[in-house]
Length: 204
Image: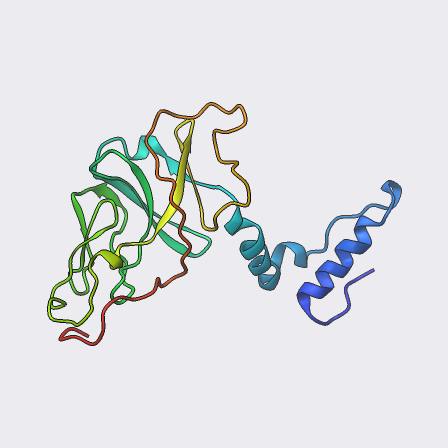
């Protein structure tokens, strides 16, 4: 039985419910739209993938303080870095001023500078310098850090999560052997671009 034309998500759910009710002899594969529907993918991302720990890399890629690499996960530009205190962090790779990328590729650095207006961030994501913002009323340098995602390391694999988990489970718990790496555990949610900082200034 094919899906009736209508709301793609409702159609997929209806056919999945039908398949779930079949006995083993009548079993069939899931509909093609289950794998190809952008609307269904959006729901999976919002209600499943963004609420799960996802692997973003390996500590062997960033062995030294200042080492970093960039990645994109579920449409979000990420910056994975070992900061100057030897902590592994997963940050938004989006400048808080005008939404430009603050890093590309991989390498080693003491700071990240956006090429648009030279906003400069430390390797822990905190904002170090924001040119031309000194006289902007109520501008909060400390409040304009790159958003940080929760980060845990298990057997040297770096995992991160967008949404605060519903339970205390995390990679390395319930008998799994954790790594001795130092990780960050604060939770942040963000979307691209992150909430912008700063008002109208001399630089557009």
